[in-house]
Amino acid sequence: MANSKKIILNSLFSAFIFLFISSSLYSKSDKINNISNKGTDLNDVIISAKKYYDNSRYALAIKNYEMALEAKSSDSIAIFKKLAFSYAKNNQPDLASEYINKYVIANLDPSFVRHSYFDVISDSESYQLLVDKYLKQVGLWSIFCFYVAFIGFFISIVLNFREKSDKVANLLMSAFILIHSVFIIHIGLYFSNYQYYLPHILYMSTLFSFLYGPLIYFYFKRVTINYRFQRLDLLHLIPTILLFILMFPIYNLPSSEKLRIILNEERPYVNLVSISKLISLLIYGGLVIKMYLNSIKINKYFSKIVFNWQRNIVVFCSVYIISYGIYAILIVKHVFSGFLFYIQIVSMALLVLYVSYTAFVQPSVFGTLRLIKNNILPEIDKYKKSGLTESLSLELKEKLRYLLDEKKVYKQNNITLQKLAQYLDTTRHNTSQIINEHFNLNFFELINKYRIEEAKELLKAEKHKNFNIIDIAYEVGFNNKVTFNKSFKKYNQITPSEYVKSFVA
Image (cartoon, rainbow, N blue to C red; front, side, top):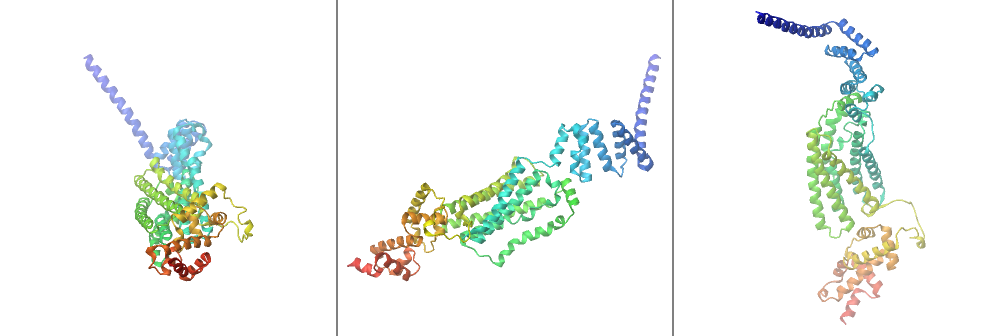
């Protein structure tokens, strides 16, 4: 009997607990439903929450604001803000950070993160993540990007002010460096979080995605075979035009809409553009490598500096294409950080820095820089301000002797002072100075002297007895018989024909 009574009491107690808990849950649910259905009740909850907040009773304020959110208040943005403040004041940094982020996205206000109310949670990890994500900052990566971009912009201008150079080739290379610099500065703005404060930079560098390949392709085509542009070449711009048409609606959006896209991490067309750009780079990269290999076979007289320059550009571009392939895969998989992500940025930056280095240290690649206009000095002062040191002068002299004695560059009928300077890896001015100081001749006198000496040897040789005089002239680099005869007589006081007769006699 006692056991039966105990069982009944336990059952009644359990039932009471169950009913109490259920009634509490239902009452809360009913209250929320009532709040949702009655605007006056919702207003009362918000007013109560405000009173609790003003009286620093943050736990009760949070409870009421959360109820208002669950009831789907129309003023949710203001509630996000109050909850962020309340959780911060209540020393709950993780929840405070959660509502800070919600407010930033809803109100399009990244600067909210720096509000003084959040000083109490400034040491928390969750809050620091928001600071790193939204607030302007300058770190090593952003400084590096801005530095490289500035150099790139400068070089893209300077290349177009080179004297006695291929203006078309330099224009192509300067455009190539310019679009790289735009991309790098865009990355720098991304690293420093300026995309939130300058939303119009959204997709700033994307428009140039399909120009990298054509620019470097036509550059190589120009410098290797002196290619002249045709109207048909405009077809290479079709992908860029189509891309502009695709992206124009985004470019035309107001800044608030662009900021909304950035904050919500929406990336329209990113996968399509990334894969298409990779395909474009692979196609044009293959064409450039093929053209470079063919040019090595055809152009036997490339100077060392030109050979190294073209080889290095091909290597840098190949590395960039590979790194971009990795970058495109990461973009498709929504990975936007890590070592592999930064490889593309580094490879692009190194390419810009290499071109910049070459433009100033090895100027013969692009032509000499116009520093002084109409600078006419007397012959005696011609090399007065030359920066050519004695050791470099002797080194260039030996290199010049090697080119003349071993390579016999004078046999090229189109040899010029500029081309000879390229072979020597120096400037026209230095080349002219070397010839004047060490040979006591000018360029044309030196070349013709070597040609005439070569012609005399050929005329003496048995195997050339059946050659005509004009054949000998062409063989040593002259373009016509008249110039050959005139130069030959200048150095030997007799004509080639008279020289042959005197030799036979």
